[in-house]
Length: 110
Image 1 (spheres, rainbow, N blue to C red):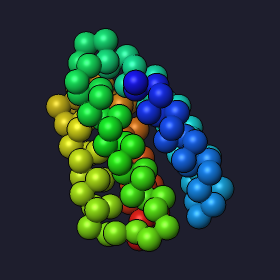
Image 2 (cartoon, rainbow, N blue to C red):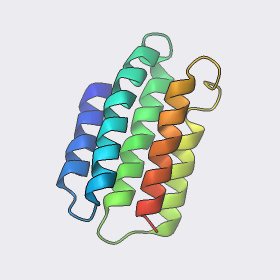
Image 3 (tube, helix red, strand yellow):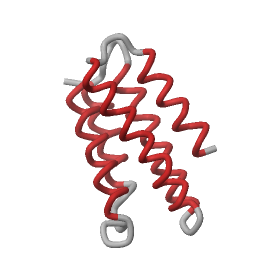
């Protein structure tokens, strides 16, 4: 399910015309890395991996909507960032990737 969800996010990013080319390229690279990091995490923390993936999907949805809702953008970004709390030591790259994705998506929602 994780792989399918992230692939769905990648497809949404590819198909959203309002995303600048440089943001699209960076997001797709980050999502590819996120996929491998979350798949690794799922071996030991399956529920947390599902939560991270779910919040990434909701955040991408909110950022790519035609009519953006700033409150929902904030909530989804907060959820995405919160989903990796506690993994700073054991999975620092995962945390860094999620934070970068959150930042890019939040900037798109402005």
